[in-house]
Structures are given as C-alpha cells and as structure tokens.
Figure 1 (cartoon, rainbow, N blue to C red):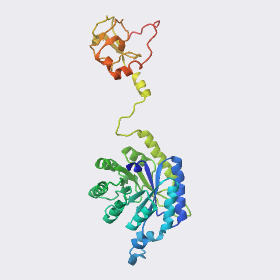
Figure 2 (figure 1 turned 90 degrees about the horizontal axis):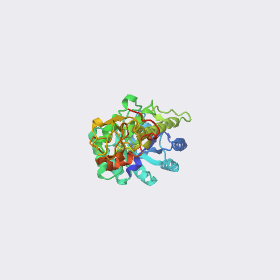
Figure 3 (figure 1 turned 120 degrees about the horizontal axis):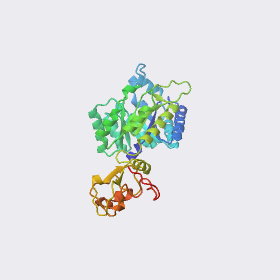
Figure 4 (figure 1 turned 30 degrees about the vertical axis):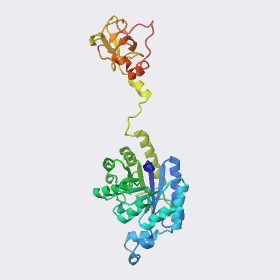
Length: 370
C-alpha cells in the first residue's frame, strides 16, 4: 500500500478556489492537462473545514485574525467540495484532502478520498490523529516546525496501527528562499525512518527545477507544492505554482529519474556495450619466447600488451603458474584453450573470454612484436 506514495506529486489547491466552485474546477482542469502531458502520477489536494464548528462563534467576526477571515472568505459547501473531489477523480488523479477537524474526516470517508494529509500544524493534535487513523486510509504528514521527538511519536503512532504512512520534509516558511530548504533533512529522515516513504513539501518561490532534482536524488518520493492559476485578476501568492511552472517541475523530476536510474538497493545491470568498451582497454597475455607444451608459465615468460584478442586470456585472469597444453611461438597470444589452470572452468571466465576482444590476425598477417 505504500506504493501509493511513490513518485507522487501532491498539488495543493488548498483554498485557492476562494469559495467559488467554478474557479476550483478550472484549477483542477488546467493542472490535469499538464499532469497528463507529462505522464506523472499526481493528486490534487483540497482542504476541508467544518466552518460552522471550526471557528468559535464568539470570534467569528474578528477582523484582525487573518486565519479566521480567510476561512470565512473561502468557505464552500460540502456539495461543491464533493464536486471538486469528483473532478479530480474524473481526471484519473488520486483524491487527497487535508481535514482540519473530525467532521471533515468523516466527509473524506463519505466522499471516498484516497489519501489523507496532516498539516504541519496538526501533527500533535491527538484527537484528529485518532480520527484519521480510525479510517484506515493512507496518510501523509508534513514535518514543518516539528521537534524530533514529536516526529518520532507521529511515525510510531501510525506504524503501530499499520496505517500506510509517508512523511514529508517541510519548511513552513511562506515563501521559502533556496537557503531555507534544508534538503539534507531528506537524508536524515530516510536514515531515521527506513521503512517510511519520505517526501518533500516546499513553499519556495524562485525555482521549480533544481530542488526537485536534488530531492529525488536524495530519495524523496512524494513532492508537494501549492498551486494556483492567474485568472480573473485574483492575486497569486508567490509560493504558489502556476501550470507552466508545474510543467518545468514535472520535466525536472523526469530528468532526475532518468539520470538517477534504477534502485539504490541493488547493483545496476552493466550494459554489454559498456563491458565491450572496457574490454578493449584491457591488456592481453602473449608469450615472450618460444615455449614447449607442458611449460609452467612465469611472469618472465609473458608480455602483457594491447590489444586483447578474442579467446585470449588477459591480465584479469593471468596468475603465473598456468601450464601450456600446446607449444607456442614467441609473441603468440595465449588463449584459454592453450592452458591448464583452475580458472579455465570458472563460469565467468568461460562466459567472457571466448567472445571479448578483437578478432585475431589472419595467418598471412605478420605478427606485431610488442
């Protein structure tokens, strides 16, 4: 089930719909087109709040509390929020929500949301965490601003309940400068929680290429940014990503994945072309002077020189002490078939020696004395 997190882009729509369902649908449609063009796995994430209960009635009209005002200004009905969730699913992207209260968790279950997100501000909210875990759904948490023991407790909480869980390295500065990103924390989190998928949630505003490439190379496997569109004159926050910037972001990820190659847990498969190139640089073993059959070779009997010919033993095999099975003339190549040695039965040697190297010279070509 943790595979649900791998190579997943989380596009945080948040409340950039501003309470208008048509604006929210357009954001989803515009980003879905970029996701499809690049062939990446993505989720568009919403935020759910049960606004009537989330804000205390005595403080609902506070003019100088930005969080309360924005929550009121971006309020959207549950029916319209469901329309947004369904539109994400219609585009064959994963549905994802950050619920900020327990009623919102219930709505996520009712709407069939695929993944739940814990905001950095809520990783110590015990009531909300219990409610999230009770759903059994996969959970991603962001670690912005958290002390290490709080992250330990969070990871243990979900591990003990066998809930599929991913943890994002996150710096909760809006916007973040490049010098704020602390990408080495990805290494730290991977080492500390080896069984957990580690991601990178960012609020930077100057770069959509380098950080994702470095984060992928360090092992991050989920990537999150806020998204918005330049539409109807609504100001776009500097830390939000526009569709054309997401295109750069996705393409940088694809390039990073190409450059990094296969998994870090196993040795790569070495291409034949690479082996052939290196074989051409290896010295072959030649006799220095005429030698009879039955002679035991010593270092003074041989010349080690390029080229390496097909069927010839090389400095990779030669040990000194091999016994000739046939007589050889000075400057002849020593082939595997010409000697008696322990390694003539080595499967690796048998597989490589007959085919590698250059074709031997024809009988009418003069020998080249090394």
